[in-house]
Length: 201
Image (cartoon, rainbow, N blue to C red):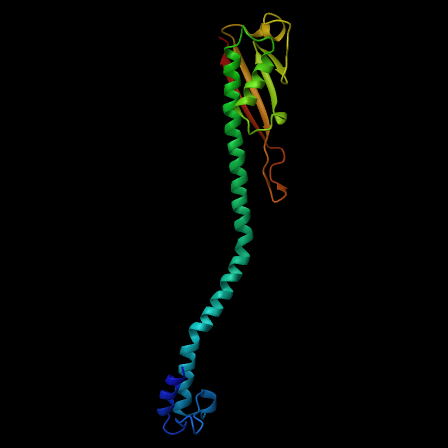
């Protein structure tokens, strides 16, 4: 900048001295306010300083934009992750319910506790879900049983006797849905429900 300023000083028609030994004036403030040198140096300083000023202004603006947008962006990303986990749990629950119902359909003559047969198969098919949070309802030949056990003395008595070949059986499993984002549960009463109907073999 000093060399460019020196060149502009030479155009100042003697208003500013060019020699450093004689105290060359290198800033616009030291020239006469109405001189050509003053105007030229003002333009020079403005041009050379403008990128730096813009950089500082843009940097501050970018930091402000980040500070304003980051909380909303984090909330959005976290919400997407939580919703994705809920969908994943629903898919696992649906697959596990299908497995439990199919297991029940082919075990008519081999189980004395149909409800436990279903619950055990569902638990094995969904290891990432909390088994204790599952609620089971098993309907066989029009009779519904709640819970994970409906044991009878033999396959031909009690609940097992309702496993009649060719009749429908319905397995319903409910699991809690957690949509909590940063301590706020957006659906406190949300529940995942999967139901599968099969024909007893």
